[in-house]
Picture 1: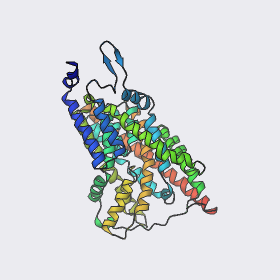
Picture 2: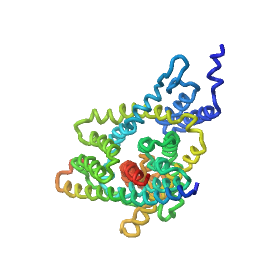
Picture 3: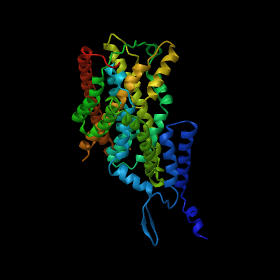
Picture 4: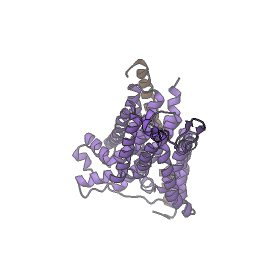
Length: 379
Length: 50
């Protein structure tokens, strides 16, 4: 009967740590509603792949030879070989986003660029702390506040920290309502937070809505070619939404398609949460660096808004700048909540939504830019 | 940590920061320009959706 104990005897302390982490992710997803669609499958997957001799990953069994595990197969085919899952998810995301508030107030796009500062700041910090340039870039991309982009960039750079990067990216996205207010208060005065921004939306024609995704794809593709898979699929989803003749496909992309991809992405990414790779001091450091990335994103957006106020007649509430991160729609909601807590009559939601959706574009362009630039500096 | 290689990578990353931020801002500014032109052209025609 010894074989019944073989699994228990093979458990390592690192695997026990992973069961605790898996349990924590499941708890956060269920009890705290922290990105449940991703953290719950990731938490369960973390337990699944860390069971000794787990059949969910490839094993070499005496007398049989190599057996293949479903999670490893999913990872190797849908993430490692093609980055298919994170890229496909962008079709669903694109179909969900209404770029109307951005199109009626295009200067909000500046914040979609400014709030990517945390990515580059964190790349520099990670490099200084001793991570090689590819790993530093993979860690920095947590600041894209965009799980699929973080997974894709870290996969292309073959970072061994992909599991920790994915956990950090999704965890901090869920923590935006806690992280952003603290970061914004750090660099704004009460007077600045009270600035009102009248909302005078311009009409947006259907032609503009249809041309927008095509133009974004072409411009981003020409300037940052590596971003074209990400931007292209995001904008393809948006074109499905806006074209007006594919309502059924648009609804499928927004619901069933996005749900299936999300489900598979969560459980598949857990392959990178194997104890031998995940339970390291670097994982803790990556969690800290991820927090720095989110804080610096917010600060970057706020500082550019303040800079624009020096030259602009119509003042911008600097908090709106922080909404330029990709975490949609949490960030816009956070800014609205902060605005009405300072002044119940100050409604910034639509302006913040404009900045927030531009953050979606900014983050995928940032991912492409990182993929293009980093190899140029690696000898 | 803070070794010669880390310092070298840090210097590279500063360069990446400069080029990257400029790149993203350029893309966004070009898009703002396009949207403004599209809106101007569209404002002359029927506003079929607001």
